[in-house]
Image (cartoon, rainbow, N blue to C red; front, side, top):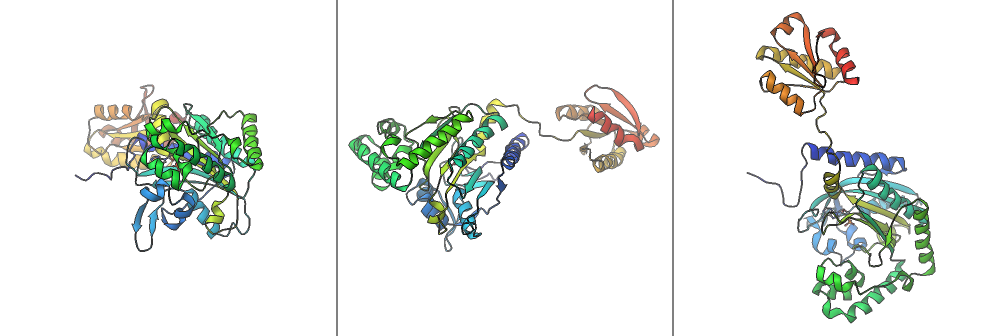
Length: 419
Ligand code: AMP
């Protein structure tokens, strides 16, 4: 027997319905907010991720799936760099276009798989390019919050925000973390001792539980490193969020594991999923377009992990019904299958979801199947019905049975389905 690759998932029946309903809700909501869909390839040149995401990030150092060594092609580990690559490739940076994109798709990271952490997973992402306005940050954050709470009905999460500032502020922030970190280096994990030298901010992102406890002592307040413009911006975003009643907490150790972030960063975290606690995350990345060879363009975005949203929904929400068929044609004998086939086709032609029995089950077992699968109407077809051209229509909700001639069948079925 063959089994799927470790760290990949597949969705059957209700799971597929939940997966698509999350996507459909995102598509509808983001369109309402003026975002247009961008559909991008799963394959990207390695270089798209090297500079922006960062040469010392986990994604680049350990997690990239390289699939073509000669041309250095990778399976995309994230969407932001890719959207930026496309923005530049389509000359939108030169035209100084203000664009709002959303995307849905699979991402790939060579992780150690566990619950909520996969090697193939799906992002729902938003990217706004061409404006440095704090209203953009506030829109992305409040839209993310609305998506979780109102669209999906997920309430068990906290929104955490911070500002890491412009590149000069980040240098200052980095320096402070390095100094404070070195003072307790003996108590940090090996990886963090290296991080202190290569990319000190990443120390704040360490997942090692023991190290995390010690790192809590490395507290650096935004006032100690943000320039006045970045501080004003940070405060403005908070004011706008307050005005629209978005609840958040300021977490001064929140930095995100990707180098391209500047300014506001944020995460939606939950206490219900164990260590993989981020449902979605994002921030501002004002330097990335220029870093990837384009014209300096301010930008901001975020991404949610569909699999983690599914885990949350399965804990709380009602599982949607996967079978959409509403009418079931039940032949009583082999000779009636032909008529069942024709009637199912007739109903479908009239826009009515219909199916029939292909397995030669008894009527009793067909009715049991119909009950289990949310069928509203069963049309019973036996020898008597075939010869008279009048069929037995059973309403499964009321158990009422009526006789309907073939010519009136579609109209009658429609009437029952809509009452
Ligand atoms: P990131 O680009 O790492 O900030 O990811 C954004 C969101 O994608 C996270 O908040 C998670 O919900 C989800 N995510 C990231 N990595 C994985 C993974 N390996 N497996 C499943 N979901 C993930």
